Length: 380
Image 1 (cartoon, rainbow, N blue to C red):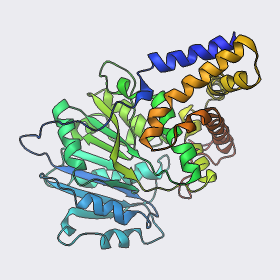
Image 2: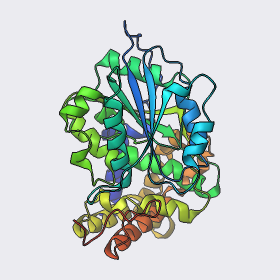
Image 3: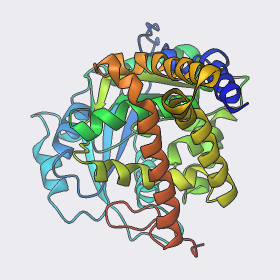
Image 4: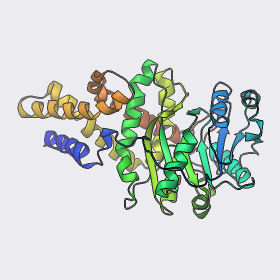
């Protein structure tokens, strides 16, 4: 019975969940240029990003964009030289493209990133000309020189209110090679990109490292304030924006993250920061997730190694399907196909991280980022 159930789960995932594992949704589009290029402003919240901000700002101010283009950097109470490095990273002649704001004190009920984003958006909307699009991007993201032009062409050509790219994540350390491809794989499993991109589907998601938003849609959705406490702010914003028009989510190798996760503890912190928030801080959903991950990822391996007869054959078959579905993501990150066999163990690791996320929340340490606790069991 259990062997049949786990096989049925993977038949569904492989053939009926939006072909999430095939990685078909890329940014290889070739949309026509608009007759008149709209004005665009990038919003970059940054807190203690001295190691990364120079490359990020350099890639943004140097965009080969034919329309009005500006960058708003919001310094979120950095204690390092984030601002100084950002200023020194400007190519000669591009100084007017960058505006730097110092974030005001963080109000109760806001996450630091969203409070910085709100201030940056407010400043951008006061610019002349008023930007028709806003690029919401992170302080660790490097953009190809034609990134904004390509995003605008796609958004304009398909009349999208949001175009988001799942950027290529840093994947060099052992911890990154083990976990990063699986992180993107699990994200696509939760939010099949083909469903996200279908206007008739209720599935909505985005990747916060790179989100081009149409300004009028963001204003119609109430701006940032309605999601001010969201830890998974990108997907929350995407859900609100999809009510106002079609959205698009794709993979890319042209925009990348410089954020490094050298150790397994760093990966744990990244996952645990928001995993329990994904479950809406519900013990019932946590229990369901534990049972679901055991059935989906661990049981096939256990049946293959310790079962007998037909259950063992089903275990090997299911484990094989699992490994095959992981291959396109492994190719994207240029890793050996043998990593596909390790997916059950990697899933177990993510399950432990999810349990740790719930534990940290219970002890009042949920959502820790850059020294701030952003989710408390006793919080508002």
